[in-house]
Length: 286
Image (cartoon, rainbow, N blue to C red; front, side):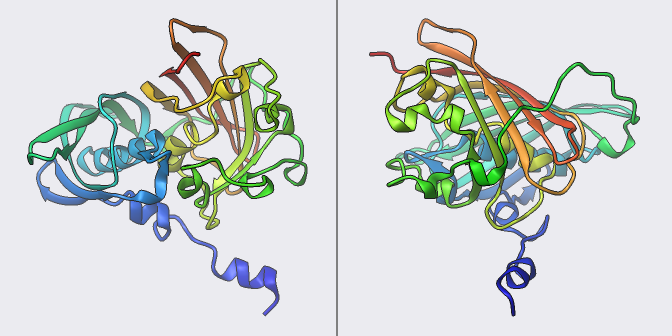
């Protein structure tokens, strides 16, 4: 079988992919879900915040009467680690077009006590029921063709501790935002990339929650190094993405007091703005 045909035959699908398996939750009681956080989505030994948001998003999608996250805001309280966890959800309000719920993810400390890792408040609806009318001044980011961009496999060695999640992503970074990798950061808080899942699974509303937090931090292009933990992250999902790779653009305009914001836009293959986000993150200075 030709290589291209073989790759197409093994392409993962929505509902049958590593991402779906690793975000799966098992109902234990009404509003309570058990799960295992996979080590495959870690960065420098910490579980990626976008992956965590997708896990909680899946639990809320099961608990609420509407299927799709419209807006979800998360506060990251303590660092999550791979292993067992429990999600507890609560329905706040249900209406005809929107339902609102909250959820928290807990893990256990060395004494067996529950520790809350992340808490979210979200509104869900049906993206398929939205009108087609679009009025926007936003434009897709100008990113070179994918074969002119670079991924982790193109570097001399992966960033220490980051290869787990990198193996699960198709990430091709705009060379204009790669100065940090060459020891020459531009000083501009920008990061742009083509994005997808490495197994070929197409994007859906849940994987958009991962996409907004999967690129290297904009802090790297500001000349900073090390972990950039998320304090708060809000995502707006605007429509279901078309099949094909996504384009993600992230910018930072202000770093002050050891905190910065990251504003992200996610565009699909049909040039539609499918998700937006803003997060507040902490950086290590000096």
